[in-house]
Length: 357
Image (cartoon, rainbow, N blue to C red; front, side, top):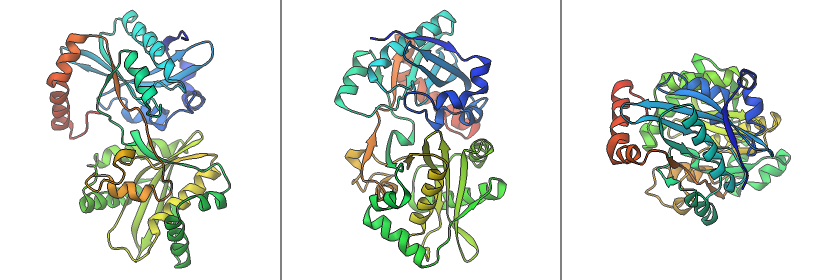
């Protein structure tokens, strides 16, 4: 078993954060980025930047901290720790727990969600490390991933005939995808389309407009966020926000009006985004959220419609291990599970109108 040490990042590492994160074993994740740190910092979370090191590699991770009455601090290693080997999770967390003790941080639990693909072997390793399975938080703990490393014509041939035919028909019928600049006009158009989709299909609830505007602004200002729109009768009918982070692209947000004229317009938007992400050097496209592989055909699942659309590009659903907790204070963690988490989440929503995580 490898030995790791953990420390907080230096000023130089913070200054060059994205360069370090995208060099992680798994190539980093957009939720570990400098842009996302700016979104979360001060939004009821304290953002820390953590470096977990061994002789073979360093791993750079965002650590979100929330200080809670009576319980102490909760640490949330969002989409981390970043490692390609599930066997490294236990010694990495041993190092992080040691740091918490040495710094007298009064941490009662460390929540993790590494991008390790779910398997019986991975579950065995995590359970053996003393980790407790917790409810998943992020929408892309199950997702559709498309390899876009080949030339675009080969990628187009690799998707399902249904999606390919939709793209080609939309093109034949003169549907046009426009890439537009970031700014309040784009933010309001996309948010309205997202609201329309949620109202029509009862998908996951939206955060506030202010949250999305901040999110989109932070990524766009770093050259990592891109808006794509289709119009009908002069009004936006389909919209998408796509992130390029290192070699990975993520279809983060999208929405549309109902009963549109253009068949295949939503597929064409994705195809335009995929080609743009290829130009920016991405080799993987994450459609960011589907039902799990076991429930992808379950029509009662709230994400069934989204899953059907996204898996028309890539049939394989990737399930990651999701959230696990490392318990540092059994008594306080028991209080957390027995109702404190539910209470704090309710208070957060009542106080801010936002979500706890």
